[in-house]
Image (tube, rainbow, N blue to C red; front, side):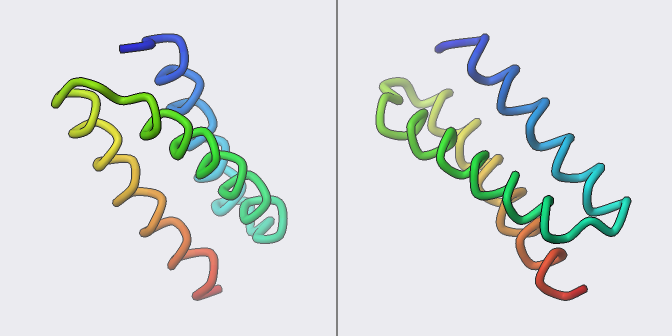
Length: 72
């Protein structure tokens, strides 16, 4: 498990949340796309069950953030 990549992912997700809170939906959507690419890369290299569980949590969160962005 690459702790550094997951920390980067966590920080990037927080940036998306902050952008949504600031009503900057265009930038939030752009950042969400970048975070999704990081998540896809992590998924491609995941080998252990705990990695897959962590990735699935982020997938659910990103889906919810995507819905929030598109609802505004």
